[in-house]
Each structure stands twice: as structure tokens, then as C-alpha cells.
Image (cartoon, rainbow, N blue to C red; front, side, top):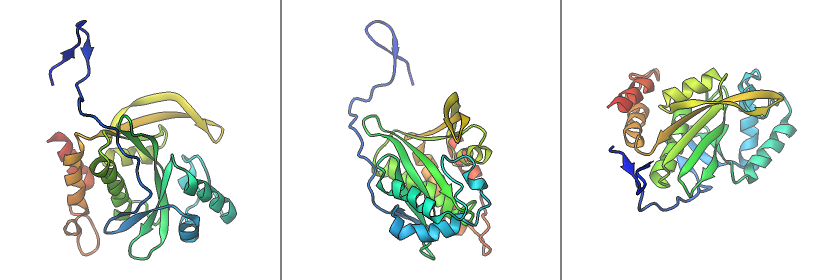
Amino acid sequence: MSARTNDHGQPIGFAIPDWKPCARPARSAMVGRSVRLEPLRVADHAETMFEAVSADDGSMWTYLAVGPFGRDRAGFDAWLAKCETSEDPLFYAVVEQATGRALGYASYLRIEPAVGVIEVGHITMSPALQRTVMATETMYLMMARVFDELGYRRYEWKCDSLNAPSRVAAKRLCFQYEGLFRQATLYKNRNRDTAWFSILDTEWPALKAAFRRWLDPSNFDGQGRQKQSLSDLTAAAASG
């Protein structure tokens, strides 16, 4: 892309002459093969979700702003009640299609329709969701809504820089690392340096094809083992 300059000879960004603000994400379901994402509601999701997260030893909460809840069902329900009424972050329950059980949740946040920027976060996956097709399809469905339905330009992922599993997940999903924000915030009475990642709208078409290829049932054998890894597919998409 050739550089542009203004009347003063200063370099400026590429033109977006027909830009219109995006819509905000709707409180409506996103449906896939293995999961559906539903607007989070305590009455619909708390019971099975609490059962699912209670199978964890507490470590899944280390890098989250809340928890662990242990056996504190009342405290968990109180947190979900706040999530249910929140507009930003906007929370969705991750519901297993086969059983109807809510196994975790995720949200859109820092929603900026005027400039087409949005973040995914508060990703809370019980042991039953972790490292499954359901987890990957959850992230795909949220990306597809952002780019295909709503036309956002930029999709962000941020995490505690010490959260190695989150950084690995971001790389696997083909988010591009952008840098470290030192002492960006604090939570649970400790510092957080924040690692920033993003996917751009121009990168999405190739990534979408890679996700769809990975999620296709033909990519898995009779024991549910993948034939091609998502990392290989997204890496090929990013390079080609």
C-alpha cells in the first residue's frame, strides 16, 4: 500500500470514505454444530454452569477478575446476575448442543461501534469446555458475528501477560501479538501487565475459511481426533 500525505506533506492513514458506524452486538443466540451461545440468564444457565465450573480445582480462576467460587453457589449466582444485566461487557452462556448444559461464558466488551473496534473477554470455560471443539466453535461464532454480521474492523484479545494458556490460545486462533502494556491495571490486589492481540477485518476471510475447514466433521476421525490442526490451518491462511 503506497503512503499517503496531506497538504502539508505529512504521512496519513489510508482513506475510509464510506465508513458508517457498526451496530452493537445483539442479545440473540449464535448457533453452531456443537454449541450455541445464548444471552446469559441466571434462571436458564446458573445451575448447570455452576456444576460445570465446580469440577475445576480453582486454577481456572487465577487470571480472571472474579472467583474462585468453590461451593459458593450464592456468590456465583450473584456474579452471573451482574453479567446478565451488563451491556458492556455483554455476556453469552456457552451451551452444549447435545445436552443443553451451560458450560461457561464469554463476552464482548469495550464495544466501540463508532470506530468498529470490539474485544472478546471474560472467557470462562469449565473443564468440560477446555480444549474441545466446543471451545473453538465458541470463538469462531463470536468472530463471525463481529465481522460478518456487524462489520467491525478490529477484534481484540487481551490477557495478563503471565497467563500462558491464554497467550497460546490467542496464537492458535491467529490473533496477532501487538505488544505489552506494562502495569496496565490491577486485580485481586496484584499487578497486571497486559498482552494485546488482534484480528483485522482484512484477515478474517482467510481465517474464516480455516476455521470452517477445521470445524467440518470430515476433519475428525471416528474417535474425534483432528486430522489437521487449527494452528496449521490458520498459519497457512495467515501466510497465504
